[in-house]
Length: 146
Image (cartoon, rainbow, N blue to C red):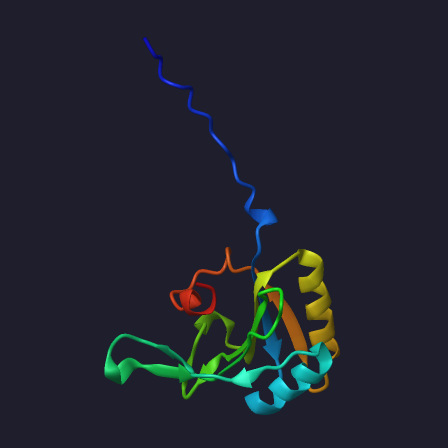
């Protein structure tokens, strides 16, 4: 008679897998000009794409400008999303942040730190903050990091 095989549990270390890195950018520049400055500094190609639309009913929809670069051969996607949409904010708790810079499929923390350092050195950028998306509780966070 056959006995049931033993069940083996595997624990996955999620820190080894690529994830998303989120940074808050403070800048007085309009989104199109900031995207050009970031393109020059990081050597990427942010281009305007369809805006990020939040809200479920027609009169409560808000649009936030979005720039994206998907041309990386390693599958890394860069996004610059405005935190201001008319009179509303995408992430209300972070009103002082003008833009969110997101790196999807980030390979390692050192690449993220290098990118944040380069963003801080960019002309017309007042401040850059690394944002921990796990600790941040907001209903609109799902639009930034799926």
